[in-house]
Amino acid sequence: MTLTTIHFRDNKFQNFTKLIAALSKLVNLRNIDASFNMFNGKIPEYAFRRHQSLTFINLRNNKFNFIEQKSFGSLSKLQYLDLSNNRIKMVSSGAFYALKTLTTLSFVGNSLLHQGEFEMSNYQLNNFSSLTTLTLGSRAFQNIGLPNSPHLESLHIANGQLPCCVKLFRENVRLEYLTLLEIQNVDFISHNEMGAIVNTDVINVQPRQCLRFLRLPNNNFKHLNFTSLNEFQNLEELLLTNNQLSFIHGVPNKLNKLASLDLSSNLITVLSPEIVTLLPSLRSLKVYDNPFDCTCKMKPFTDWLRKDQNVNVYHGGTRRKQNTCSLPRAQYGVSIDLIELGLECNLVFMISLPLTCFIVVVVIIAALVKRFHWRTHLAYFLFKLRPGGYNLQINDEEQAQNKKYDAFVVYNQHDSDWVIHELVPHLENIDPPNFKLCIHERDFIPGNDIFENVLDSIEQSKKTMLILSPDFAASEWCYFETRMVHRCLIEEKRDIIIMVSLKRIPDDEMPRILRNILLIKNYLEWPENEIGRKLFWEKLKVALRSDCKAKRVPDL
Image (cartoon, rainbow, N blue to C red; front, top):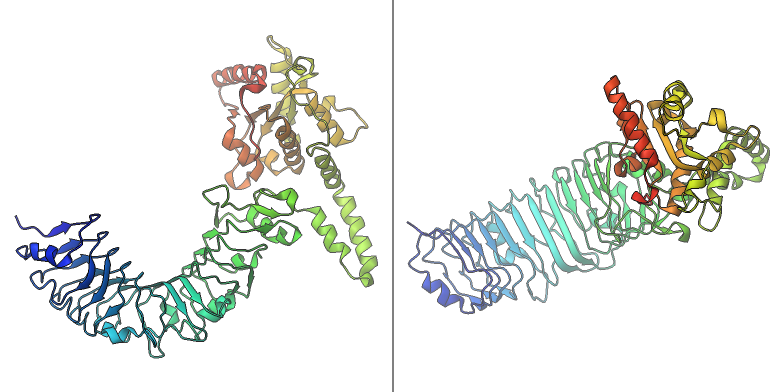
């Protein structure tokens, strides 16, 4: 058997020359992994002269500081070389001359020192005619020359400093096959506008139409002009996480293939929905860990967030890194897809209209008040339900037995026939124990405000029963009754909701708040056959008799 692969990873070897000498008889070696050791000094000339079949060498995370002129001179078959995270300060001319079959080179995390510019062609990189993946990094670099790397597909640049007004690539660089460009932890001195960076004065990579993945994390960018990216017409992924972006403008009207956009961990306070609506192929959006200002300026984006079903908006994996509000203080920590920015934002807008339009404004306000009179009342009662406001006692254990009703039934008018002829008879009239239901058609007090009736019914009932159907989902009244029930539950944290699915609600018609409740609540489904209906009534009676302390209702 011929040994072709050997690993010395994670040891404390120090003498690289002795180690290679000990392997001198293994002439058929193809893969050597000597990473994470303590090798120091230089890599001598023809260090691998007895291992000319090598295709893979990993020397990362050692302490090498010098590469001789022909350190890799005998390796005409080498395809992968990793020299990252060493202490290399000097590379002799011709060190990589023989590596014409090399496809992957990693040179990040070293300490190359030079008085003038760091020009990779000085180190004979221009012989890498087969190179497809290159990772570079140094204290300072500029004018990277790669004129003879026609097949380069992925270029990663990290941990460096780019002086003011210096170009990253030479004028004649054409990377015809470059699809991925990643630049991270680079100090673009005097540049904080990302548009200036991607324009031809800095990242002057050509042609731009080939680039599909552009990743620029951890570079301290403060502004983003989307218009400057329109030349990258085939871009599929744009990653700008962990910068200091606070201002985003411009129109991305030519990025028709962009599918993934990552703006997480920046300083963005307000997002415009135009940024995403003008990206027809967008499927993934990450905006978590930003200090969002959840005032009326965010309403267009939150409205889009609720309506759009095609874009997956990711939430961060930790409590700190989530899509939550930072301002105003009352909304701190609230998820941006749960905040309510409705009528008050419209009023702010209307009040700001010029006085010359005063008459028009008065007419509009009057029409809105008349049409949305019930919304005004709802906002008032939700305000009363705030902590310390309306003193609503839902299911205090000592008062549970004194409730007037066993359940308050919330349903749409189109389902009233089932409620009156099926639900009420079976629970109130047929077979003990008999229950007392609160039905709005029968039990609401005439002349009282509808919202007062709803709140009184919730307070006077042990349970609240939701009769789900497509008509229920489409009804604004049912939606707001559900909202009021849920808002009341936040105070008491008790499980008083019983859900009955009369007719299946299509997923695309399901309100967000109802979907969230269904994630944590089981429901009873109205069966088609008589045997199933008998079991249905038994289960419903058990639910009505159950202890409200059985489960806690979370604050959704």
